[in-house]
Length: 456
Image 1 (tube, rainbow, N blue to C red):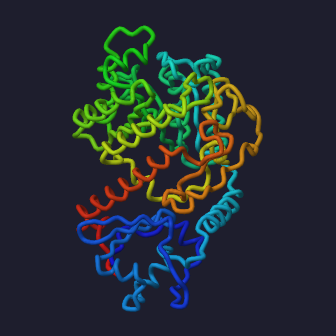
Image 2: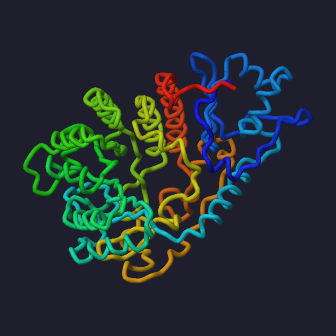
Image 3: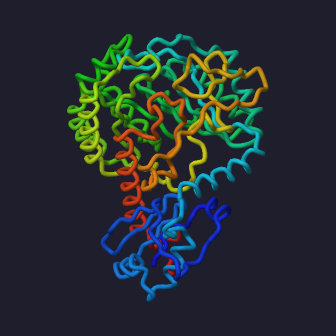
């Protein structure tokens, strides 16, 4: 057996190791993803985040619980790769999460901030869930006050900023003020952004790197040139928006920023996204930090007018599955997936995260920009409880993605389900691509210190 990746510290700290017992019947843990590779079988445990490689002989012996490999079986049992038949993984995972939350409850800092510099946008996408929301922008005084709030609440911890909107680049001044004040206060910070990227130019990209400390950006494409330009319908558009955005994507990628290209799928453009994927794969083939991925437009979210019949949902689901199969790699940011047990579903239930509106209001979720605020940056109120987590369903009990799957019942797109069928497929496909990519890169670097194989 070869150890490719050690388990994360959460597993070491919170889980009791149990030796293999001959008198019990065992099975592979449902959180373990096996993958056949050229030199055996990789086992990735999505709970512990440990990855090992078994030879074909070892995997066969382990699968049959042979007495010839008791040392291996003991390792697999102690490290949660195999479990007794009656073991309840879901219950065990929830117990670990609750322990982590209990310990974490003593930490009162907030260091993850989703900030809306504006709810305005320079694009006019017909499906926008914010289309009917109030349009207003953060003024300079509020931006200064937001920075003061961040400095106070972070309590010396490193800060992560998520710039959202509207289109955040429609109010660059507020982003500059907040970033500069954090820099002047010697606060360590990094940022992500959701943007259509149309307003970027060389000067703003340089600012994004050196002042905003932008590490990742999510950019939406709705199709090829004609479709994209029609759907986005940019205000005051004086150039070919599609070509400009592609150029900006490349500028950002050249600065080592991770670029996620979200391909919004509707019943009108689903077939065209296959052509878009092929186009993007060819155009950005030299960049490992540009990652396209499809996303079905949610229904019943905010002011979105999107409604589908059952037949239309089935067609979208089938197209989505086919499209996912054309995307071969998960992108350079995939290693972020390999390190954490997911304890909170999102910023809405995370006590260390908050959303800041343009007027300084504090909210739970960027999908509720005009409701459900609980305080302001000028008050000192703790974030209250917002929503119960959706309970695991029967299919969750056999899903290796479950340790990284959490959703709140108040999340409109889900309606009591942890994931739609297409999301279930997407998460499992993504996990397989992540494991494959990690293993392939590990093999390439196995002679380096960071990638050496440890034999047991």
